[in-house]
Amino acid sequence: MLCEAEDLLKKAVTLADTVDILIIGGGIVGLTTALSLRQAGLGVTLLERGRCGREASWAGAGIIAPPDPTREDPLFHIHTASIERYPALCAELQELSGVDTEYAPCGAVDLLTTEQARLTAERNVEAAADQRTPAGEPILEMVSAERALSLEPKLAGDAPAYQLCRRTAVARNPRLLEALRLSCEKVGVVIREGTAVVAFLMAGDRLTGVRTTDGDHHANHTVLCAGAWSSQWAPPALAEMMPVHPVKGQIVLVRTDKAPISRVINMEGAYLVPRRDGHVLIGSTVEPEAGFDKRNTPKGVNTLITHALRMVPCLADAPIETMWAGLRPNSPDGQPFLGPVPGFDGLLAATAHFRSGLTTAPMTAEIIRDLVLTGDCAFDILWCKPGRSFGCQVHADAQ
Image 1 (spheres, rainbow, N blue to C red):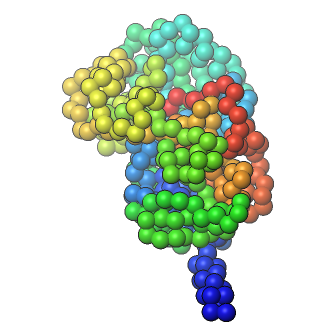
Image 2 (image 1 turned 90 degrees about the vertical axis):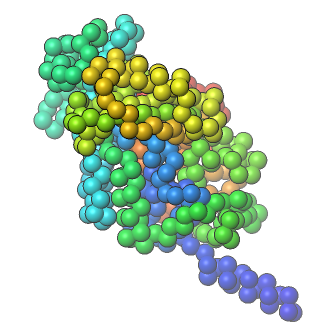
Image 3 (image 1 turned 180 degrees about the horizontal axis):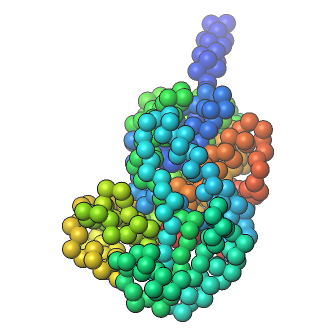
């Protein structure tokens, strides 16, 4: 009888400590999802092994770029809806947190250095012909060298062709993440930093919570948003179902009195991002072979600087402020894992967004919120379900 009483007491304590939602991972996707779920009236606890927003989300460029207009998969619609959501989201975050995310719909200019790049750009312009800005201008447009230089006088003027994108925006991602963290705390999300998940707690096929470095946490639903680490400590069955691997990206930050560009500049997969304070961010390498090594290398830094000077030669005299690298989470087919995880009732995934995590975070959060509340969402997410086969074509939008 005594043992039965003790078991009942343990169950009662567990039920009392059970929250509605556990979020594993405090990056852009985890924080945005936590905020959305809490605003829907649910009790939310977010577990972060380090500090919130200090991995890939912090290390990225903060580019909010439109998707390839020739794509027809559902991610195109999620991507587009997220871009449209960003102005309102950043305004809301500033009101809640007092932090200016430095959101700016600045646009982008692409330097097209090869015939293939030009042909691809022309196809994109044609595919997006019916997409217009609120002012009625085309989202994408091929422009002459003279026009490109009138927009960005410091550009190198020797590219064979140029494309203007009016939909690209930027946010200063460290400020965006700080605004998200403070907003989550303001609305009542419980954030536990320095809390690493080490195991799942299962009752048959149902996930009831997680074991962490500071004890057990129980929840009705758990959302896995752990980025490049999503498969590291997971049970073998889950790691096989959702193999997430890191893709290293190095970035260099230079300082000028005033940023010599006002738009994002792209060329051959490299990019320049202007900041309000005169800094220019130079990114980014793509190194899937680097594993979890986040060190900068002479080869990577030299590649970035070489591309930067080809785009904007006057940066040659700009002092290097700092450099860093981040680990973007990717999947074998380049598509995220999004939705319920088979065999783990109560677990949802929102990870492996590669380069689109920041851009698609608003709608990812709304999808997870709707799945928790209703079991359904407004988008077709079968294409990104955990446990899918990986025979489809890779799509990885450059940002």
